[in-house]
Image (tube, rainbow, N blue to C red):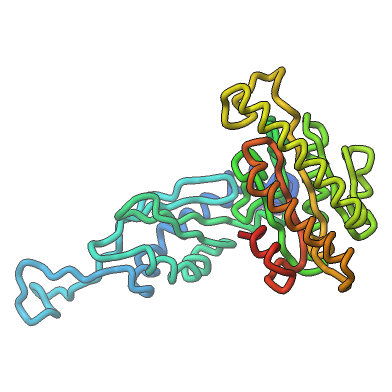
Length: 340
């Protein structure tokens, strides 16, 4: 072969490698569809039977005629039969395989084999679900979706907020119309205040009243004072804010009763009050008492007011988002009732 032909071939190969690396880094979705999916689909098809046999997913079916015990039939050994699976269906940054179970099998055996699928197919993770009886859906993620989350745009629905990305790669949306109250629990530096900040920034553009209770002197929620309708930075202020919300809640009850409806969402737009989202950072500060009568009275008031808002506020457009390190019974029966 002529030297210039070899040099040209090497140059083309080098260009393809560089271009492929650029596409992989800057256009991972293109790289997955063009290169990643075909290679991974080939691994799935070529290793399916072997992985099924090694992980007890295959069964041995006895033929109609047996010549020598259960071992030989017409001179051929009895071979295990792997479950039937569909051809891998491509998904963004992954693929899915639909498997038809053998009689007597359950999805639990496939859950145990999930790690084996990960290693055999060389993917990040494999999730096992059962869309209907007799079927198992294996969903493989080619890479960790949290490394480069491609978040969608914020949902247009009122009281919906795009918080982050799920481990499946989808968008994590907090919809207060579907789940009216949220309890966020975690240790220090686990991201509670960051989540509240994200929620505020997402709801800031909506026609929603935001009320903050931050008994750490307003260090966290005080950053959003310009958008908050009210901010309580100590327990005494929290009692006043919560009391005002309970009064407003009673007015909303009267409006619904007069209109003959069971929630504010059934009221006409011109009569519907503005939804209120109450964000509490570090719930324990509302319940801890130094032993004095005044401190204990404030803690009891906060407990009662929060519980009333949680029990009655969902249909009236008043929503609680409570964060804290501890929500156990050591803080008193009021926290236990609120958590329930």
